[in-house]
Length: 254
Image (tube, rainbow, N blue to C red):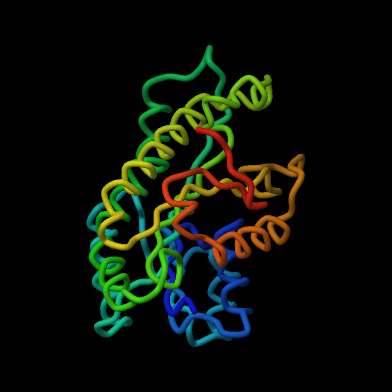
């Protein structure tokens, strides 16, 4: 079983729903680290209410674009783990600006990359020692979430091969697409870098979900998406190391 999980961007949308799914498991993790930029803000009220009912949910501030914030979160997680490693890290926090090819500029591209690429890179680097510790402590387990896993929340919109199938006026989102393609490469490089440490690294497409980012026009509810994601997480193995997997378990080409 997964004894500890940390998820970024947990105050709303997919991140919040994943926290709900983990805490509702018949054998929930002993520690569920729910992180977001501003845990005390009004947009985090539902997360705070949930944590007040479940002692295994630990809310922590974590701004993936701020290395001091990331390092501070690592210190707090170590305290709660008390010498144990971290089973599962899900880099879920992300941003999207609806800017097309004519309007996208350097500032938009840089801001998007900070959150969608540099953020997951920094968080993964900072928590790598705890993931490695978990892999060492569970050396007998096969590659997967019960041993040690790093999951980057990506998107089919970052698939170069599927660009012509997913491109239209509503879905140009140029900086988002390019950042997710870069995140996919980061995932592949992490898989190569950490494979000898026993850490599984996978990119995951949550589907087109009815969130602030996905809008109400999306085809999936957060419940449908995260129910699928939880099934995918439970079945991750060496076969899925270094690839892009959809919420329904299908493989998406780079």
